[in-house]
Image (tube, rainbow, N blue to C red; front, side, top):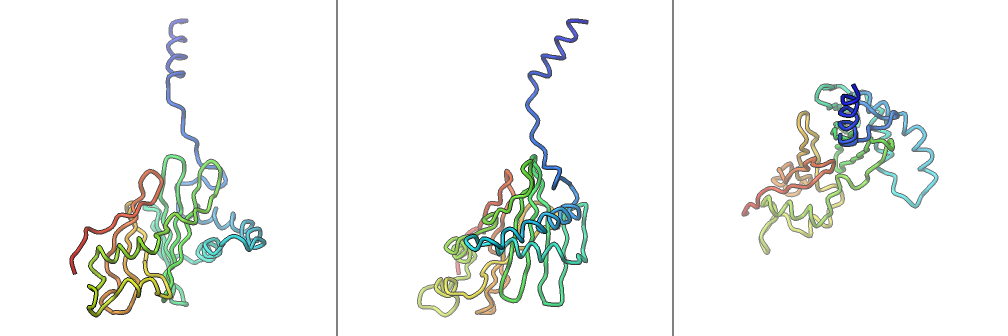
Length: 219
């Protein structure tokens, strides 16, 4: 009997430590529940954040708008929801699970602007990751170049300067209904043939979103 106890104790001692679970304040595997948890969190987070003008809280304000939508598509098994509304803005939400919890991604597509918000849920609770889907302008322009959408110098068509000076968003994000890959497409409408072209992806790897460009195309 003593030998059996020793074996059990030795097995417990050698077992790898369990990874911390998500906080009880946001823990779930259900996207509808995750959105409800975030809505409850934002009821206190938004009033507090609005008192500090030194921080860009636009993603938080967008998240507050997004979680209040009446979602028409609810694919709970795949962790995806979407809706279009009367202001010609469409909203998407997707759950990206990881060993410590998950990321809840929200995307709003309007006439000229794409809004995003990414919240991480882990043992610490909710964290707004402002730069999770951020693609710097120069990197975005290279995505256009790799896709063959920038005209050669001296030729008519889309230029790097056009993209730098563009007044709205130049990238659109399309959340996956299945899988862990976000599609990136072009979002400039001049010239017309540049709009809606595939530019690359954001792939969810080791709890981070990584930009993967298309293979370079010649124009």
